Length: 596
Image 1 (cartoon, one colour):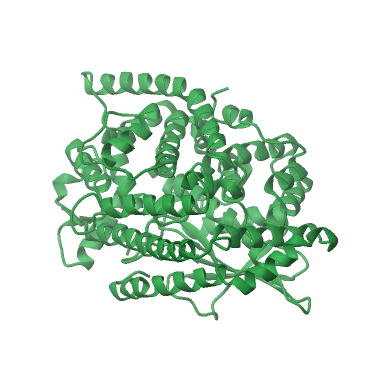
Image 2 (tube, rainbow, N blue to C red):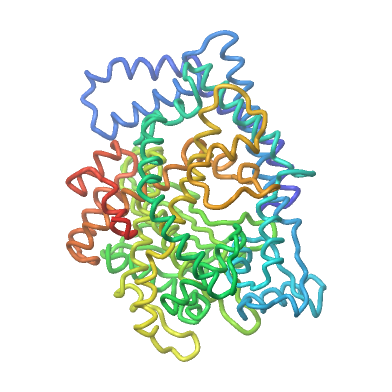
């Protein structure tokens, strides 16, 4: 909920919140008490969870300036407040500019667009007083569908330039803001004795150092770059064959032509699959996955308050009927709602001093295609994958069985937190899962076996493109957070950062950084690599399920007990070895993507 009044309020409150948080970390008497406990830890016979709590608490105070004195303390406080205010403004600018874009088209502009997208555009136009026209926004599901299906190359280019040119110039420009954020972060890191912000940020991650992050990113780049050349050559040849002439592909062409190629190779069209993925059935299928794996049940509650009429609430219980927690699900886009998808919790799990286990209230938020006057919400396989992803995060929060709230659920190292979510996505390519819920919303016929086969067969399609694209984001992030002086030319800086994984020629007026909310306002600074780090883990973990059976009860029990229930109570490498019996390598990921 981000209307103007809420945004104004958050700008006013952020300095107050920052000042309060800094006053805690710089509280001299509190720090002395924490340090006294820490210095005597070896004589206290602590449990592993207590040891982790103490270490993380001590490190948190240290990393937030507790060891600073005099003017250095005052400078840390000032820089922290400036950082928090700037990151708030960055995120607000992204949302505000996104909400300004409305593209009104006529009936002759709709060539290639699927019926569902056209109907939604007509419905939105009618709601906003543009009767007889078709209104498109830059919301993620609308943009992605338009770029994939519109046969009008000129309109795809227009949409691309609008989408990728956001927050670059004008009223909501983030250019100066992002450069200030990066420099303020560097100053904070230097003040605390670190060479770069990445050195500071990565101390409490599985990666530990910038060098280890670059090692993974470069290792994956070298493994996938040749596969991309093969993919690109095949796509170029395909485009030439259907366009009767060679064409230099641009970024606004990839989704359209790669989808055509995938249709040609696999007779696979996501729009044809939508009728088999009606949202309520998908909910049943995704919840059923957890029921099969972990023995839990979900019952919708209609009597509990929600923050918007679209939100659904589910009571989650274990096989003995004990309450696990509440799950809130917010599925549809709306004005002033952030794009994308995420999980959070309104209340985490913890055990109080009387031994009562306080169970969590968890939320998953997405932006799926809304129902219209004639059709329910029908999802693509990609949207089902998004649901599975966020639901994996939710299970991590719901299943938590720890004592201390700050270690519960998803309060784990950032490059470990995506393991449960990305692990869940693997089930979309398993026949048993799809067969459990995918039925036509009108005829109730199960999804044809040939469609199931096509979904599974096509999972490797475009794997190199997807990997290199993600590596590009990771490299941009690391570049901003390994600077040792302010950035002058943001365009040249970004171009150079991702040059080694560039997929197409540069486009003037298109830049990722000014809209890169993950790293400038979303908590992933020097951490975007964690998606690939966790992908290595999830492929390695799922390989064990494939060996033992994807619904093997014992393997699922181990995953739940070793990973999902333990939160951040031990080092994630220890938890993973306990589940898997070994450290992860990239081999399983390379096999899954058909690279090896």
